[in-house]
Length: 225
Ligand code: ADP
Ligand code: MG
Picture (cartoon, rainbow, N blue to C red):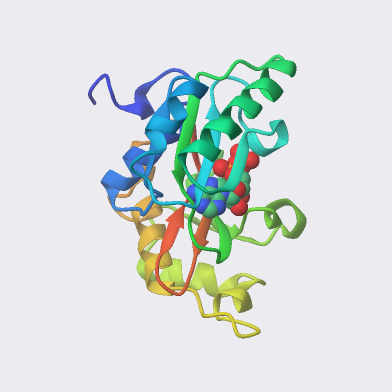
């Protein structure tokens, strides 16, 4: 693999590099741009369609929300720049110096899922799918299958979730785009999927936001083994 392969680096690659790799593999991710400083955020945001999301990245920023390193619903470049200055102040006060900022388009609301590859000591790489975002810890509603998973496996994983009702549409909300979710699961954990490139690492998309039209990975992390 080339030296620029983010999965070949020693430390965890930043979110935008993992997302670039996902996009290349065919997983939908938000359009975004990075800036090395808070001052650069306005220019980086210039080509993006609001509402915007701002995130900081760098060492010590694993669970970004816990450190105040995620801001949603920003109206445009000026607001994103203001949020970056504020965010920087808050991070420095916690002893965190970010490497930079990611500004990206905000995905439409939908059902939030977690999709990941974890390494089981006995079975090896295992695909995990479940209800994600804020619900991951609270519900512990996940399905796992040894990689590579088939299309039928992927459909069964989603159907087996206790929260699968959310995916089928409820209280007037549209059903999630199951074909897009199945395609995403196969891109990650199917034959020839990204799991084959993970060496000893683990991979987590949390959340993937599924709407009636598509499924977008709005957070992505690779943890080298
Ligand atoms: P954390 O490191 O805290 O997990 P995330 O990148 O997952 O940070 O962002 C926290 C939450 O913000 C997500 O669970 C999701 O609900 C929301 N979010 C993040 N990025 C986007 C985006 N581009 N579009 C819509 N919602 C987003
Ligand atoms: Mg997340």
